[in-house]
Image (tube, rainbow, N blue to C red; front, side, top):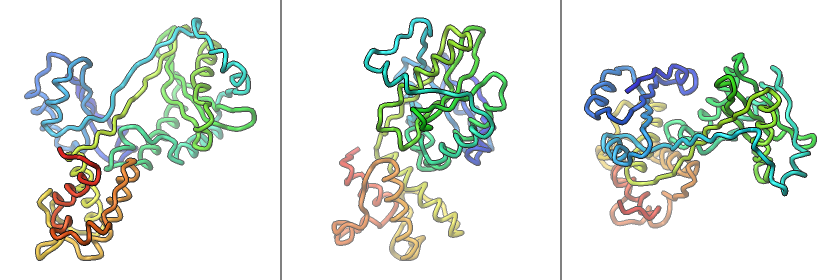
Length: 315
């Protein structure tokens, strides 16, 4: 078991983060004891071994939530053949080594939220803005790394995206990050990130290129709904200087409520907006919500159950 202080996330996300590489043979009791020793930890990412579905269940039971799978893909650049139907359009795609000005341009475009499916973007505690700022910082750091190179990608005369390469060995290089700008995402130009990365790797004298592909699954269950609702309410209370511990039993209306009527309206809007960002549309001001004999706003738990009902989730 390896514990890594992810110090870079202090700059990216504003929190103390740790990554824990859990391997086959490690035991969960030791893991729990070691993370309990991380007194300053605000965010812990556990990286689990492949082929062990049972360990995923154990980590869920102790409060972790599945975020993403990481797949490594490797290509021998000398064996790569561009599909015939893409050869013509590939001729109109070009790449250029980025200078300081170009990197600033790329970072500015990244911060227009071009990445929206990674674990940070989908986490209601962070969201799109922080996720893309994180990638922007990554590009800036790699620009100053002698082992890395960043390229702008063009289709004809239009800047459509970028890709970054990082040397991993004498003969191997990795695509550490690549993206297509928002206005060009529907034109089928994404393959250019791969084809031109391979072309650049060949020109640099490398034989092998790899990339890490992250696959996120938008698993929506009652636990995730409760976590999201609590996170949104916590954020509102923090901004309003309301000192209270939010749990599923926290009352939202009635004599012991923690919010006034305006506060309740604000969190309703914030919760709806957060779920929309996660591509789940809910309505908390519907007729059924406002006219229900038993109000869904009694507590955080009842509100979470009402959202689950709208999303067709029973468990």
